[in-house]
Length: 336
Image 1 (cartoon, one colour):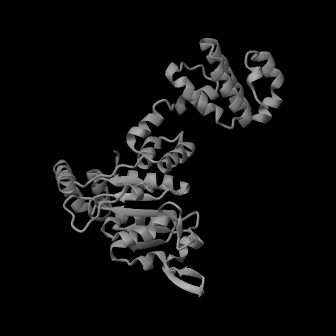
Image 2 (spheres, rainbow, N blue to C red; image 1 turned 30 degrees about the horizontal axis):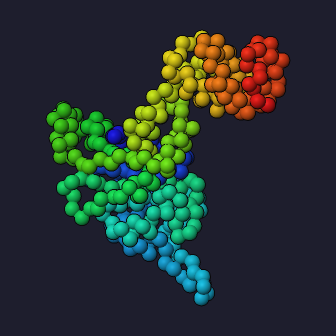
């Protein structure tokens, strides 16, 4: 499983926001989950709707039924939720594991279907939940897989240096005292604030989350951290094992790179799914020719070129004479 400092968590949440993936912040009490959400509200320019599920009734979250006629009713929602439907907001469901199951069920549709009371959330609305799963905490429930599978999960840990930086901006004298005892405090913070960490599940929904992340952030240094939030780390490692976008970019730039044999099928699959410019397209064909000449594996190259041609049909048509001349072994595999 992965853990995140507050700064790391903030960056990952910002990356997941455009993908519409709900986020569950898990961490010990006082670690800074609520402060993190408030900072995100300010930085993203979104109003914060703070819902403490432990003190709510189901109808306050899911809406109160109002009969329209004898066979039809609508749900009247809390008016404070209006920004989540109109222009976007942060819907923050705190203390999820301290709420009763009926209240959690009332909010379930928000966590994946992005609806509340039958109304669709605005695309810019960010859904965040929070739990503290410490074994010593009373009145907390174990969250079931059906709920956890709806979230990206960020286990928050206290980072002593982050704490010092936070204090330094507000209490510089005290921060210097804390900084002088940083190592001792780091150990004490770890001992005193241990909590039960959560692992993202492995369901078709989480695979879809992972697909969104890879599609959007395949070339981002944070890719692995983001992926660890949406699917179990062992599955994430399998997905990323041969995913080398640095090499892909070098190939498309025309550099002569040596590629490990085991990575070639994944690299071919990635390139074949991309929309390329003319130079990248011709460099992709050069790489395909090199692979074909080395391995003589015609089926793989035919599949690669077929997908590449469909994604880049205009370039195939424009360069067909060059392709026929430069790549005689490949020309029949390109699909118009």
